[in-house]
Amino acid sequence: MANLRQQQKQMTRRLLLESGLDLFTTKGYAATKVDDIASAAGTTRVTFYAYFPSRSDLMKALIDERLNEVLQRERSPEHGSTALDLVATVADGTREAILAWLRGTADNWPQVRPIIRVARDAAAVDPELRDLVDRWMEEAISDIEDGLTRAGRLEPHQRRFRGVLAMAELDYVAQHWGDADWKLDRAQMLDELATSWVRLLN
Image (cartoon, rainbow, N blue to C red; front, top):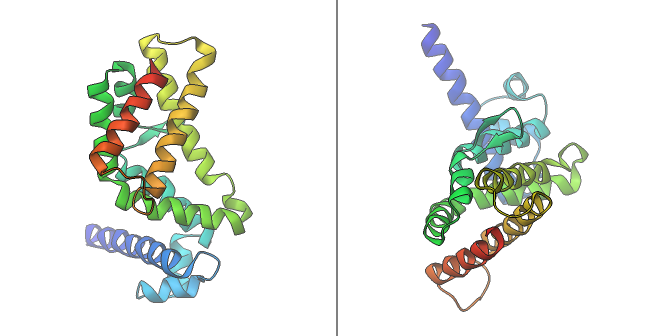
């Protein structure tokens, strides 16, 4: 019985997260109210607050849980979260490893993009969320720095900034790949991105 109750709680929480993301995407963060999310999830405002103290907390959970789950990021005491496969890829440093990692990441872009876009929309109107996406990007940059440190490549003062440049490229491409007319197909785009990463990280 207790196990069934726990499963129901997890299902309700997941429904609230999914409904919140859907509404933030279609209506915008500012226009979406707690009552809207609760109603879309088939529950009440009281139930919403039993799971999330505020709309901001639901948005934080989308980043901390849903986005990290999609990107296979694990909890890290040093950085908040870490992607061990990214650290290993950067440490390897070969074009083959980098291209393979970028291809795997690109497969997740349809799930990642809405969360990042909604988070940026939310950060523009909600002071509690201003550093949300930046903090998450910093965690990914730390993975690149850790990979370079593990491999002993580049000077210590270069490693973090090279991570900044690599993640800025990846983030821009991930956010615009479906909308921009870059005269490249997906494979060519990833090939160019891999070439750039190899130059930056070696």
